[in-house]
Length: 215
Image (cartoon, rainbow, N blue to C red):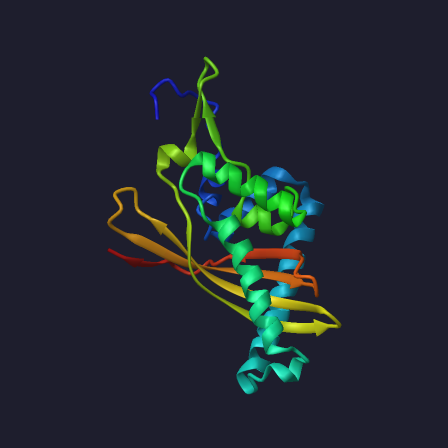
């Protein structure tokens, strides 16, 4: 970054939140964007979903049959393709410009807004440093941040008529600036797909466990 950049630097915790796999920094960003009541509401909702997911995963280990949920395997396969579109759209970027496009496209397509847990965890506003002359220096470009999707798994949590509720676990990869190493963390996403393939009720959080590294 230019040495002219002065005191109007975006808070460090907000920049760290852009590393899409950090739940702690995502929570910090909520503090920048919302008041205490909003922050509590977001975190309470995520915690509720996590508890539900843990219970359901125990059930899945006891019996992996989709029929126990009233789910149809063909429908799940179609929904998985639909979910892949969301995952790729929101978690794939390699520059400030592509990040902004991913953010705007995700909000527009799935009806999300700033403050929603999914946006807080994975696509907060892109931090931009400004010097006294008003020149802007996108942090994503300066730090060489990037995100791409590896494998993901979608599991049925519940079925309500034609609405299927899913838990989605995504391997999110970030390459080092020299391209020689890759860090991988797991992103957790909750969403509902209706009979027409429309996605709604999207939320999520990033893993707090250490990243798996290679290279």
